[in-house]
Amino acid sequence: RRPPRVVNVPAELVIVANRLPVDRVTGPDGEPEWRASPGGLVTAIEPVLRANNGVWIGWPGGTDSGLEPFEHDGLTLDPIALSAEEIEGFYEGFSNATLWPLYHDVVAKPEFHREWWDSYVDVNRRFAEHAAARAAKGAMVWVHDYQLQLVPQMLRELRPDVHIGFFLHIPFPPAELFQQLPWRRQILEGLLGADLVGFQLPGGAQNFVRLVRQRVGHKTHRDLVYLPDGRTVRASAFPISIDVKGFEKLARQESVTARAKEIREALGGPRRIFLGIDRLDYTKGIHARLRAFSELIAEGELDVEDAVFVQVATPSRERVEQYRVLRDDIDRLVGRINGDHGRIGTPAISYLHASYPREEMAALYRAADIMVVSPYRDGMNLVAKEYVACQYDDGGALILSEFAGAAYELRQAWLINPYDLNGMKAALREAYHADAKDLSRRMRAMRKTIKSADITAWARSFLQAMDEVRPAHGKTLLP
Ligand code: F6P
Image (cartoon, rainbow, N blue to C red; front, top):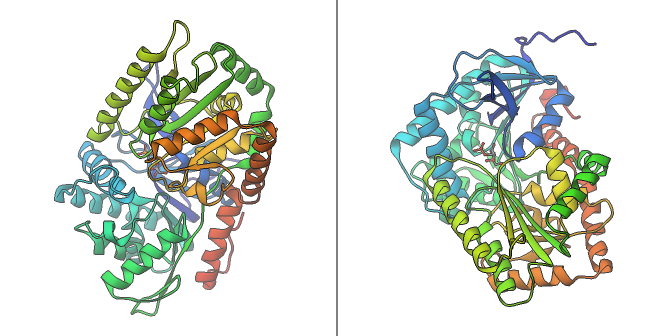
């Protein structure tokens, strides 16, 4: 057994993300306990932190204040408290009702409120101050995502010695949309505090560089921005991935195989199971995919005895108005489809509003014949990659929106435009009838792709780029 690490020593690697990898929740006995927090970010960053023995600064959910740094499952976690007003202004407001819809193609209308912006600035400053206090001299600080875009600049002012990386997990919008933001210049300058700004796709990096040139007036060349103080900032794409081996190992477990069989049986042993797994978010295109499926049933192309759609929707941002509206919409749609097309014991859609542990997700991926990922816009979409990672026998079909970052790598999926209902129906139909040879040819190619670009490769390429941008760094953090 290793002796427990002293939690408060300065760290060589500091991860700064809105959420900690665990949320503090109240357990059934009324006592606080820690539970895995939502979203793909945690899955992506955790291995990097483990490999480097760093510290992770983030919000533990809720409004508890005065929480001290602690060790959890071998990770050093440093909680930052948010007040109820900050949750409303910074998190639900500016992050998730302004930036989130704006960065996702304005799928929902972004709201611009000056009080929310003020709260965003305050909370970003608190994160920056915290990181400044925790980082060792010359440490690497890796800031994550749209909630914390001002942190790089604020941190640089406090600690010019540290090396700052920033990675945006969601899309970075084209100038035509970003320009709507009343605080567009502050956000660009905030990001320019980093040495390296990472995006999911080259298009996001190009949007950023173009905006910096147009709005801030800095000189740029390809993926480089030249600042007046002599500093250079690089903006490039680093498509994020998953722990491919870990997922495959999980999928091969006997317990998971048994559970997958149980799921199939519980669904009445249909010929084909369609599956959707998403955070309940209006960007995910849940509505469109369920409509496409129900039209195929209504038109007699599919029969509920042969095909069922399992839709798992993980509760998310439930106090934000747009998310409440969406939940009601989906509830209504599922009720209508099942009412119109279901039979006793055989609903057309099996809808679950819940979040499940990884084992259950793997069993669902194994049970499903056709995975439907149909976002209107998505930074990457790790569910698509997780599904592929679990198909170790090269079976199963993936239907994937061309507006998900993952579509740039998973070219052999049935690529769809989620706005084109007939196109989506055609893809569902084709995947339903596809022969085993076609399925395995596609799946084999996609598996090859993700195996060579897993989460370790992602972290490695980002950290390698950091080493190149700031060679003075000296010590490498490559896992
Ligand atoms: O990956 C996008 C993301 O928004 C993360 O930043 C976030 O942690 C996750 O999805 C889940 O969202 P939230 O933290 O708002 O519950």
